[in-house]
Length: 459
Image (cartoon, rainbow, N blue to C red; front, side, top):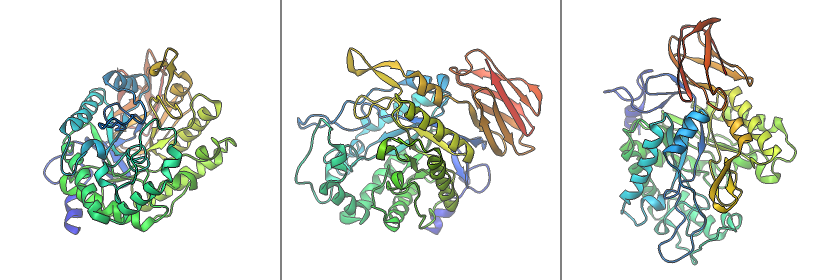
């Protein structure tokens, strides 16, 4: 372990590795940096993608749910119209390794297609090892049938109208218990899969990292999750020494709004990645308690600080068609900005379940995209400092002006997210009160400033 830590520790601010500069973003202690060493802020969205979110069967069973397509036009929309620079992409073990030790190369190629399409528009991809209720065979998505221990007595199918019951079924809870207890060599199998995924994308500049598991279910057993994370992280680092590792607390945090930190995450270049769903799954946040959201985010910030990592909120959201859902999103974003957290909204497009996406259904086809839900798009499209040279102290957005505060001497080229939905025609900026030149390209604006305060406005 000590040798592995030595190999993966970034030697200086230039990034991880001894022989060459980094090609991917990385965590420098509690700061995210891009490959050029600039402080990186990630604003993004989650997207279930057809062909990657694995909820279909090849034995005649009915698919669990329809999953929307996602392509380069969507990457361009995220980057230019919304100013986002991250796609959190759920991928499934069952898609990568449907049979033990048998990789599905076509599945990896489909991941690469999405990564490359978004990279072309300046949008990073976080490879999220996703699961919901452990596996499509007994829940919604995640592990292949051969990795369910004990083997299930019954295989399920669609339509997926009983997900909440599946999450707490005996089969699902037993499978989770076996995974975290490392029964039947499951850690080795999971680590092989995670390492294979990371190794195939370790030189891709469009990949920001790999998330070790979505919403772990250890039922509050912090030590079991710490041991699991350490084992899987070691397997990934053996295959991809310089890839950033994103890790989540137990899914109980979604309702508890805090989680005790056990062992500090034992690898550098790591990012703490909780979800923020304060009261959403209890009553839809009916009380609209803003302070409860702020308290949850502040607790997450403290948890990240204990680990010595950046804070990235991998999911947050609520019904975007309601005033409460929109208020929740705004409250979260304000709280994230206040503690310098990066984030990814749930979800881009949804044809089933809660339909929380950015789009209405097509009135003539419930499995086709309808019009954009402008109110939630106009909440997510706030400008922010995407990449700044030097040290970022903080930033704020009041609906008209973005103010970026830097440590004095932070000289270099800064990239500002300048969404076309906010500033469709022009962008202007000052550096310590003096006007500076701005280069605009779609939803990005670049400027040079060696001062302490950048102010950005537009039309």
